Image 1 (tube, rainbow, N blue to C red):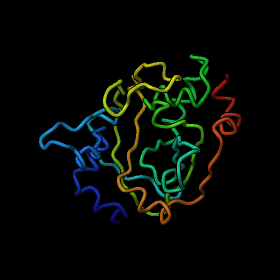
Image 2 (tube, rainbow, N blue to C red):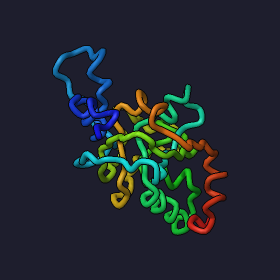
Image 3 (cartoon, rainbow, N blue to C red):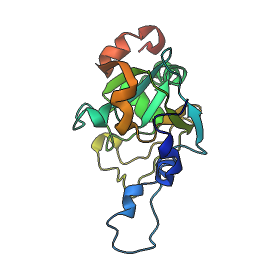
Length: 197
């Protein structure tokens, strides 16, 4: 069965976004031929089919995002096995779940507070790019201005496989079911046996 977002995989900008390129730089640049910034994203993205109806997927999002499209419709997701790696890192580092997610997934405060966890099941076929996360460095779109970031980059954790779902914003209402949006602290309390902080 064809994925709802199948057409997105023939549009090259989605693959570039998965790789961490800021394709928005293509628009409004004063000079032609200037380089498009790459920061974060995933290495060597491979196309994969997401499980439907029997698998829960997760994403960390910003509660201050302007609308549900920016929250549930965001492209970056994890399966439970990868989320468990993030949660397990809390005990070893003493970080809370939000800090750990930012650290392992290379998400600066400047980009997201990562203060809510969205969980959902896909009821329609969707495809994603999957791969190991790339570091975020202080350059271009990420300037390290937020005091919490302390002017540092985010190396991420290469053992965590991330999912980038192209054109998720156009399809989330049609495909997501059993959606829960929880404060990250509430979610963490439900997983104390893993987090242990």
